[in-house]
Image (cartoon, rainbow, N blue to C red; front, side, top):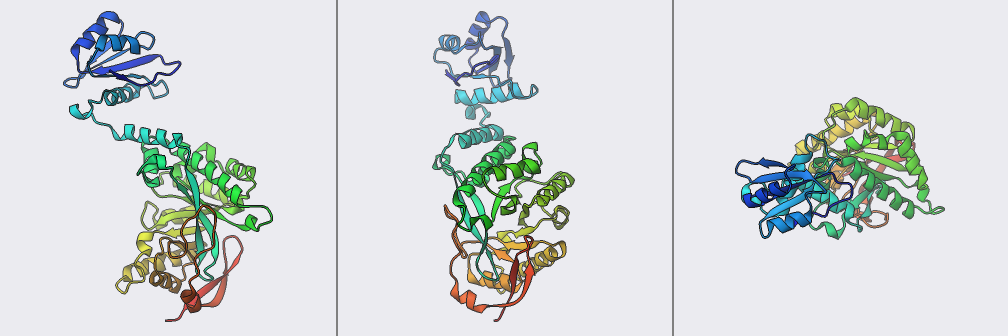
Length: 387
């Protein structure tokens, strides 16, 4: 018999087994218990927690396979028993045999429990580079997982947070850790107060009360930073269902000095219409478009980049090309007047913000011919390149 560790204040417990003898014995000892036969998938027994104890089940079940778990009162009533049943089946270790293997939701809950339990997550900084000067313009904050997460990627954890209905909990944890780390690397008197940092959030989180603009600004100020140092990056692993509300939130953030970026443009859910509605300060062109854009046969990708650049100019935004990994692509992006870039060619992420790589051959090719004002009022060079 297997069971989960019980918690204080639990009202009900649920047991699952395929052994009818265990059910008969429990029914004899607990006449008030509810017994439900699950067709060819065994039985579940639901009873008061003080009656359906681990000791009783262990004594009656002997060597029979079964699983005992608490019924979580925090779950909506319509689903709490189904969730408990799925957990009990998994605890019994017989789920795969009867076609009741771990559901995606249960698996996601386990991933999130592990994520919050791990203590060795950390934040790294990748430079976002001005393609006119090849100097760092800002740094994107990348959340790195603890080794305790095994082979899980951050993308998989984000998906698990959505599946487990915990995206706001996830983003709150990540944003708090990220702001704390930024405050540690930005030292007074070091010029760090002029540094800017991109912080990722899901659309759902940005619409949650805990991310209300004024409150978010207060959290930023509480760690000694200014909203003008933070660019909120809206990631696209989730469809934006309420554009009007998100637009209102973006405007509130921008009034307080935050920048706002739409991430992975051209690959996720954000169409030109959605991007225009949100009025971002930054449009980040997805790496699937960027990588290979310098190839001779990449006319379609070149046209897409040109379209994003033209579109961004018309709505008052700037562009960032993601995933730049070779000089050929970098030069093609410079030719098309993309404002900024990031990727392994320009600089990998590190525990502290560092300047981008020194690319002498690209620097020699760059000719400054004009200047434009950025969203934060800074004047930056616009480049054209010879062949």
